[in-house]
Length: 322
Ligand code: ASP
Image (cartoon, rainbow, N blue to C red; front, side):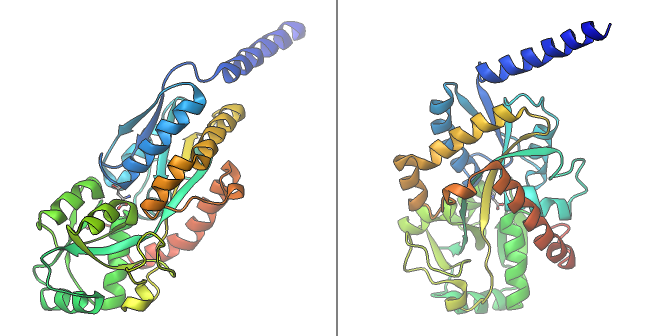
């Protein structure tokens, strides 16, 4: 009996090993938890394309939107832990949402980190016709137009929402939040002049700022961006300390075999080393983490540290809804 059981165990282990060895044998899906055309979707598409070449299989993007990204993340938590359904997300979906929503999953324990991905700060941007020439004038305009002014967000607790709440707290301004399914559609409405401001990831705003279809007042970082040297930091422009870095990561469902995670990590690392990918990231103000920070362990450690840092801040700010 004992012998039979050992044989059975060896057989199962053998099958698992073989599947990890041949993985991937079919296309892989990365779930983006925000609308197509936004910053998360755009980053995922660039990386997926390059990762697919390393893995020898197509990597497909699926946008699963709702509840500031928590629906899309939940889809991956419940998926089979076989390396074919992955979750891309960032500081707000994989950290902040846990402090705001009563999630039916645990962000740290129900997901296995794969790789830390690029990060970017945000630009404080407004519609082109807004009559302000700098951040101080924007703040004055928001105060004078408190009852009508609107800010687009990707939903309660999204990076664009949390940053705007901080902006309000620091500046003493009040304006109405308009939630979208991602900052891609919010950007379309900003360009059209239907909303007044967004605090948006540089990767999403940069092309519009460069094209002159919207106005940028400051970047939420300590240093100016090399790709946008004319835009002052929040310290220089008058909202000191509003530093937000939206860092991305890639996760798999908990229980995904270690060698599959290693293959996916290697593909993500190769993508981030590709000169063509690096050039695109640079143009959009996205910073690629140093090589020793691209590991699954580094992502897990960062996520844990950020949960410890941000949950008390977000809870104290009572960010629970729009
Ligand atoms: N990540 C964006 C935000 O949190 C939304 C998006 O990717 O569309 O504001």
